[in-house]
Image 1 (cartoon, rainbow, N blue to C red):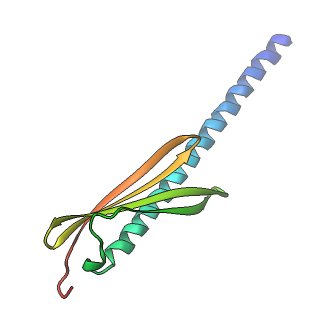
Image 2 (image 1 turned 90 degrees about the vertical axis):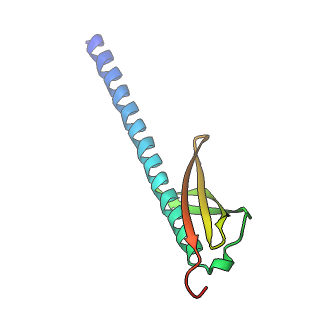
Image 3 (image 1 turned 90 degrees about the horizontal axis):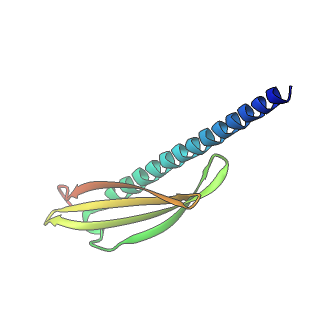
Length: 118
């Protein structure tokens, strides 16, 4: 009887641990999805600007808060533009976030050329 109770307790503790791991992985996936969406939004907003409005090598950082899984999370967004040619700039957007002391990041790049009439 005691042995059966011990085996059942160990099994339930293992099940509880697996639920905890699954929850943490689900949270990381949701945060990565939000970071990807935030990076895409910032890049699209930046590409819409007139070519001369896209600054050179100035690094701009901003903090953004989003509600993920019912809790507020902070994302740090940094962007940098570098000149590739006379009519082309390379745009770089980095989104960073932290979960339990582990920092993660998502980076995207785009080339923006001067359009006709700009």
